[in-house]
Image (cartoon, rainbow, N blue to C red; front, side, top):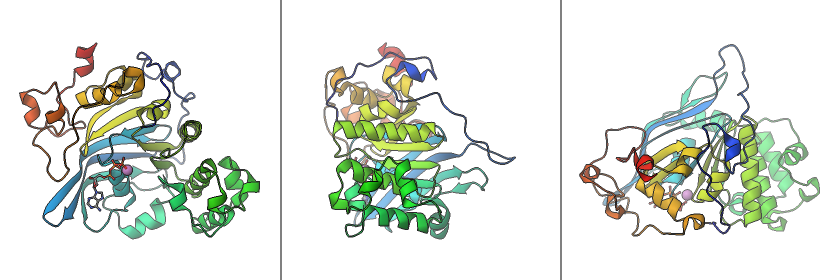
Length: 348
Ligand SMILES: Nc1ncnc2c1ncn2[C@@H]1O[C@H](COP(=O)(O)OP(=O)(O)OP(=O)(O)O)[C@@H](O)[C@H]1O
Ligand code: NI
């Protein structure tokens, strides 16, 4: 985790009082209303599960995940490496490999268009109407995403052409904060920050209202992390929805309105950011917070379980110092796989 700078943890703010915590949020703007039957565009994920079949084993990569993100909001999905964050993103984009099976629903509601269940939609529909147009993916590694033998300008122009956007590469670049003079460079001639801006610009070429950013700051130094976070917050404030996937809790604190914590494929905590940083309900989420430098850097003992061999009940139970008999089975299916609903009240 890129957690070099200690940051004071702010007390709980009044709900909606974004100015009281270290966020980049400006006052939330209402979603633009389009047409008579305007709805605020949103993504509603319900009981999303993903399994991978392997010879002799099944990987329980994501189990019964539920969350929602709307225009104007940023939801951060945080958790340790391997907990299922990227698999979740790939499931939503229809990009899972052939050995995957998916269950649940992920309703994408877009103004002026019929709702679409991303998990049930045919590949042709996802390719033609969703990827790049309604959902833009900011990939983890800009260098790997860009074609090495073509200039930034050529790649921006191609994205615009494919998505039917009449804007010029220069206009798109200017909006992404790119210096037009740098557009004739090849990817290896771009700095890390510039390459990141090029892929951000490509993700926005089709004017998607939902941005899925999968570890957009991995490998970047602190100033670039800050710049990327500022950019993501700006996208949300401009009326887009942002799903930020990260293991960097401090980066999430900078931009997110809501924090979802995943552990071993399950969402174990889902809360408004103010509430989360004031005291999360699940002992694992509490442990993640205590591992922040500002909270003393206390690591969580033990390791996450193998996703091919999950314990029964709460998967965190073997590492948890607060488990009770109730944790030996999962709670009734619901938004959060957790037996500690009053954790933050008890802790304070
Ligand atoms: N095609 C696949 N076949 C089998 N298992 C897979 C496949 N793709 C991913 N997995 C497994 O699914 C689990 C979740 O992986 P995922 O990439 O979503 O983790 P993550 O939370 O994004 O981690 P990181 O922070 O390292 O990116 C891992 O155990 C991974 O090994
Ligand atoms: Ni990942």
